[in-house]
Image (cartoon, rainbow, N blue to C red):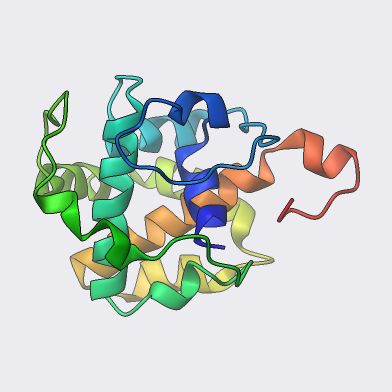
Length: 176
């Protein structure tokens, strides 16, 4: 489901999104992953330091539109093909009046994300090498700014999913 990617990228429990202006389903039993240094740094750049559900959802929808524009939308449903919402249901994202407006533009977020040091990229991509080499390879070979940014989004979501100790300790599927 598209929520699989969203859930891992946003990395917050269902109750966090109760007051979001965007009604997007989060599994009630989702347990967020602990951040490591790289994923915390990337999360802070992507979503800021404020804990605002509407702003996180708003940014996610903006990122989702970038992913679609880059022709990488299939990666969103790669691990789970079920869909509980569709992007076009949120075409209002350009016109919605957010209670707390974003402080930074999408361009600033992309620029700051891509200007991280090599050590952050290594910490993010190195653990994915064996199972998901295309993300590191894509990030290294692609020269287009937006495609590189999308590779970071995918790698961050997958990395956070891998950091969830509960799923692996109980022998559950990473899609659970």
